[in-house]
Length: 429
Image (cartoon, rainbow, N blue to C red; front, side):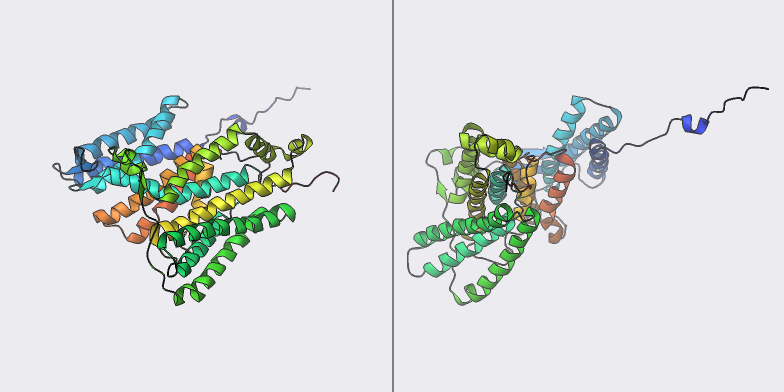
């Protein structure tokens, strides 16, 4: 009897062709397309003699930039970066070039948009950091909560409540006392209002162990309804002025070219952003309280075993975060506009969460994320000033588009504290 001849499935043995979609690959394709658009647009749409004039204040020389040449050179850079990102399997050079390309997108678009015009770089930086103030403060509020294990998506509601109640108190007191005193009291009320909303979050999330996302959503909805009611019932019948917190130039430092105007000629809440940034960093990484907070956020059971009161630690940190969020809300009504409107925070609390994730739950990284979003917001305003033929509604979308891009691509894998969002119950209860 003849032996059976073995058969082989050649189709199964054939290698399969797969297209692996990666984050770097997507950005490489986008950079390649952006580079082609810059080169073609620079040749066809920009006049060869077009010049963008970059100014740096009144005392520094202006920098002329040939717009067409810049667009072509930048386009070649982005095209090469995109090709390397697709062709090179691995390599630090590819990552560095993609990172540089990401940083250069906004100034590149600004230079092209300002063709045959001038734009003040110092003013742009100053406006960017000032617009970043509530975002950075909101991110710091999130860090205090989430480092201790409490997920806080209620930053928006805390900010909105602080903005409303702080301005209401200021408007009611402005006629009976000096404006500066009324503003200080309004500022204190705004901070306290944020803290009160945070106590509600702590009560729901820590004591009753409610789902923290649901609890935060409830607080956001509550804040929208509450502030709208207060505005309709109180502010419509009062004489609210447009006074805002006054600028406080720091002697000597405010006279430094560029840096002085950007950092040392601001208003109180703007300065408080830097103070709280430093305090938060020091508290988290150089104090016993910070060590315990990080331990509670990572492994509350182990921290409890070592004698740390997990519940008390979370309550205190959430309350501190609420106070900071209330201060961020006061930036809108008391420092910037001198008024209050419904939903005036415009989702900045959620952008603050994106900045916190961008910064990997660290104060310095969150500050960088906040400045990025502030710069994108300032860019939209600059486009309107330069008369770029884009509908203003699309320009107002720029910060939110940047938020999506950052969370979807630039952040990569961001690992939150391991116990974040998980209610803690002591053993034996």
